[in-house]
Length: 326
Image 1 (cartoon, helix red, strand yellow):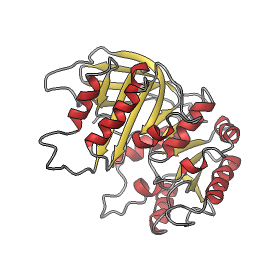
Image 2 (cartoon, one colour):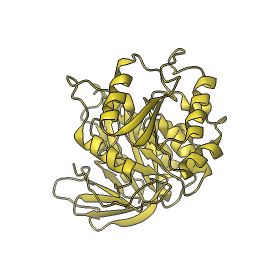
Image 3 (cartoon, one colour):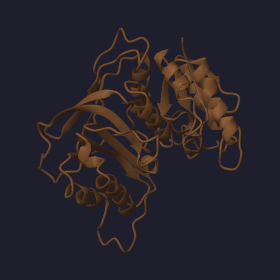
C-alpha cells in the first residue's frame, strides 16, 4: 500500500472535518494515510508558528512517505524559504517522495527548482480543497481524482487541453512543438520570488500560471512585470490556467482576462496559450514541476508530455500516456 502523509505547511485549517473526510477518501482510494501531528495547529492565520510548520516540513521529508500531500495553501511558506533544509527535501524526492499541492506550494516547488536541477515536485490537488469537499459541494472531481492517482502511481505521462484564448476559427499555435523545463504555478506567489535566491533562473522553459480572486488588470500587471523583467521573453511557451473568482468593475467597460492576455501577447514573441485545466478550480490535472516536458499543439489541442523516472514516481512499470482534455 502506498504511504501518504497529510501536512499543513501554510494556512490553518478552519475545521478538522474536511481533513478527516479527505483522509477517509484517500484511504478508500488505496493509500496508507497518516496525518502529521501538527496538521491542525493554528496560530493566527497559519497552521502553527513558523518553527512548527518548518518542523512539520522537515519531519515529512525525513519520513519520506511515497506521497506528501499538503492539506491546503493560503499563505505561510514564503516565511520559511530561507530556513528550509533543501538538501533534506531533495533527499526525500530522490528516495521516492512525491510532494503535491498548488497555490502557496508554488514557493516550495520553485525554491527547489532554484537549487536542485533535475528534481521535480507535483502541482496537483490539495487534500481538503479537493478530497475534503462534501457531497453537497460536489464531492471529488473524477478527472482530478484519476489524474492524481495516475501521477502518484507513475502511470501519468501526458495531459492535454483545448487552447481557448484564440479568436473563433483561429489556430495561431497549430504545429507548435517545444521542449523545456516545466515551472511556475500561482502567479502572485511566483512574482513574490522574483529577485530573491528562491527564483528559478530558467531559460527556454515552459512556464505555467494560475491565480484566484485577482482582477484581470492585476493579472495583466503581474504578467507584464514578468515580461518586462525578461522572464516571459526567455521562455519557450507560457500556459495559462484558471484565473477565476474575480468581480467585474463598472470601470472595466468590457475589459477582461482575454484583454489582459492580449496586452501580453502584443509585447512578446513567446507563445501564450490559455485553457490549461489547473488552478483554484474543481477540475485540475497534475503537472511535474521541474521536469523536462514536450509541448505540442495540433489545431487547438495542446499536449504536455514527459518521461517518468525515479524523481517523479517510484514504481512506474505500467506507465502509459493518458490525456485529460477539456
